[in-house]
Image (cartoon, rainbow, N blue to C red; front, side, top):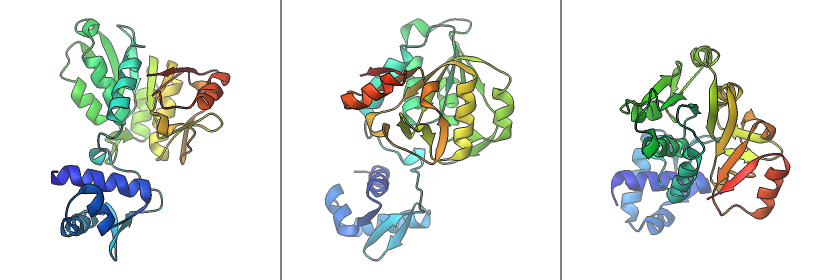
Length: 259
């Protein structure tokens, strides 16, 4: 296992559990304790975790794993979700994409759709995510509209009043939201309030809203509210979601697609 892969795995385990012991991490990753100690020390220098005697804890009370360190956990689910979401988009539409791992997969799924290889434009993509804009900018058939704003390093998203200025002047056919939590009662949410504000504006400027979220995000709450459940037209998730959760979303008027 490469160092980068090991660091990603360590950080993800740390986010899940809150605390990791050296011996526990070494056993999980099948490497030596000395390697884990060195990894912990180097990650602590980058302020990615807090070193403790014999292990490490997450950095801060509310911790969000930076996008560059997120692994391919639930990769197959996210790719299936992304393909299904991409299938909801018609040629020529204006599509808003928030940042995140699942919406990045949606962008990739749109890029390889056979019926979107040409057009004037084939799609208009509006996004505040630098990585998504970078990946799609090489597709000449796509018109890319990148909001202004200040880059948020952990998610590559542009936030702040400069982004508001662009979004307030346009309308979209569909907004695709990547969320950290989506609950029937509490709605969709993100970790960061500035990021949530941009996502909320994307929703308001779109004719329809699609939430792309794997089943682990459902029934969860997060700090920063994006929108009410009633504002969401379609939820695309994986087949691991339980029937009760699906039923509650459908009762709230949300169309649920499981893939």
